[in-house]
Image 1 (cartoon, one colour):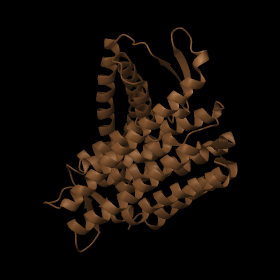
Image 2: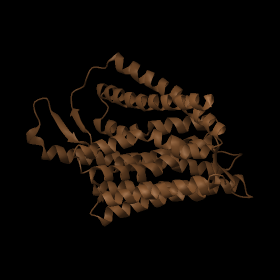
Image 3: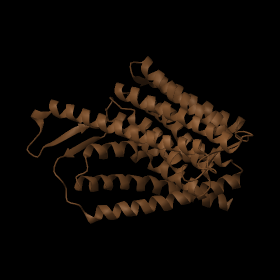
Image 4: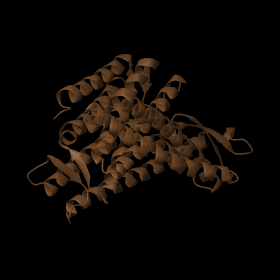
Length: 366
């Protein structure tokens, strides 16, 4: 009993530190980038697409490095399902509706679906080439000299780079259009306030064309936040693994639900707070962008260097459910003039509860 209490406390504290460290990292890396003259567009895209995914990425990365790759994959897939069904569902129920930008819905939604399908294809290829008897313990990664597996992993990594390039291009076009429309209102310091729907993060950002002075404090905070993120993620995975063993819970179940929901708190905060502040033209780029990043980078990039073990249920059940959830959300948006109302939100929460119930009580021990 004492072990359960101690590991639960460690898990909660580690989770809080992971989320705070990610927040400090993004805030200070943006300031450093501005001081070095890095494009504000690039910084915006980075913060939107990667910033809120750092907790999931760090946790999945540490799990994979510590040879608990099935837990790392569970965090990624579980976070993605929760991001779509849980976060959109909660936000729609609380605020009344969530409105999606047409371009983000078509672009980011399609990319998220393609990413999920690509993951399944690479997993099936990997399983066939590493275990011809078939798919009970599939691996993604370099095993012997199986070129199809390496090729699949490289495709996942390069696909994200291509998507990132598209995001930057769209950011430039949106910003240039906004500048033309707002030219008369730009003051002598040439500062503008830009609705973050252009960067998928619906916070109000101030873009200044002048350079700020690089401060050593920001550099130190970035280094400290990276160190804190690494240490906290290590404790997070370690405590979750111990809890799973003590309580007889499969590690994948722990990753799919407890860790995935916990590490997705930044996405929930960003999406919910933006809607509650009345920014109803809410782009879904933050959530869909994090889904794409979560799959293509932790799984795709790391599998080039180290085999990643995939559970059969992750291949045949969890990943298809993730893709189906994305498709359902897109359909709900399109059926209601690109909006999610409370009924849609309740439906999404119900869908997540059904998935969790089936996965835990019917399939958990398989």
